[in-house]
Length: 464
Image 1 (cartoon, rainbow, N blue to C red):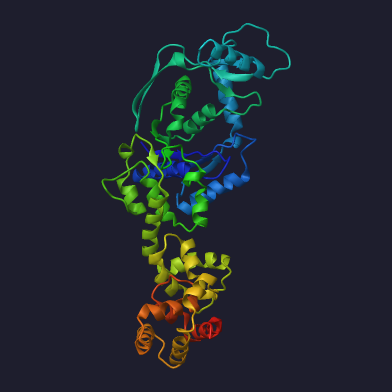
Image 2 (image 1 turned 180 degrees about the horizontal axis):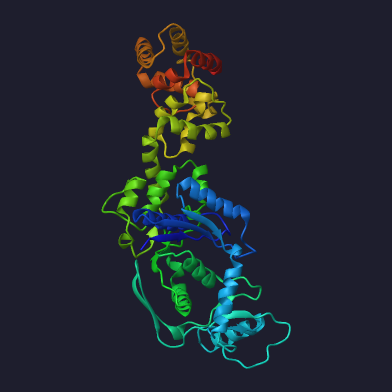
């Protein structure tokens, strides 16, 4: 059997963390078994589905590197197929037209709640001989079996059994001819020969209904694997306040796709104690049996930690290329000096994201004015003559890290002060910041001319 998995998002919003993890698990399972991964867009919610959301999903998949073998397929391009099968079920007395108005259905449910019953369609048109009312477009409902059980073995949850008398006659086609989720997904999975349906466990209640439709069609059943949901660190359902933003927002915030892939894989799945692994290792190790049966918890701090690891290991040229747009967003004009590759190499150990890296690099590409607090603390008349002498020395020395570092130390000793008493005012006057890497390393990258320009410009801010 050829393994065929699918990811079938609805384009009513962005690609979020939960959807991306489902896509990743489906992709990894197909790749592990040499199978096919299919992308399908379930766009039958005409009021909420948008081209922008569809594009956001495609962009998210591309950025994450979740390449699909077939698709994207769109449900709204398959309406003829859904209608053909609905007609087949009607002819075989496995479906029927229901003429209940919305008001009738609302009244039905209110009465059931008042009687302490579970709200559900009561099947009043199932075998009705009534004359259809004028002016009402019917829906098509499935004749769900009324006896027996639906029993299946979920590859994550284990054996599941649901009594058929717990299921009502679901709608297959709405009155406007658009298929419902449970009908469309069944035919899509059938026609696309999906062997394994890997999806969130919020769909687990739909599975018995879908199995009954497949059986009515005499079709083979796929294997199901329902993945537990993702919660926030507080145990509540994941939301924007927990970091459940668009996958593309993580790109905008400076995360690397490999880091996010690594983190998503560990949300509810594990391979021993391995925390950091490549895509190839994920594909090699991935199996459905190792998916945890309990909800995973999304931890932004853990994601940042992973991203920091990947920043340290990414090719410096590529990292510089990724950082450039963030610097330009910060109003920096990046030229050949200082070398951006050297800048990112100097700073990457100190940050968690590319955005933080760019923020930390701003002073290399434009002069920053220190705030008043820093000036008041470090710009004084005692340190001014020491810095003036350092300006003179910087004008003639060889410009490399060791020489610069030695000159700063020597100057501090000559004036009877500890190194930090000189290094900190120097750092603030040149970078506008109190926290940077080694000031000698910073000055070496800035270059002699830029360093002296900034020192001469700032020295006028010191009191006499």
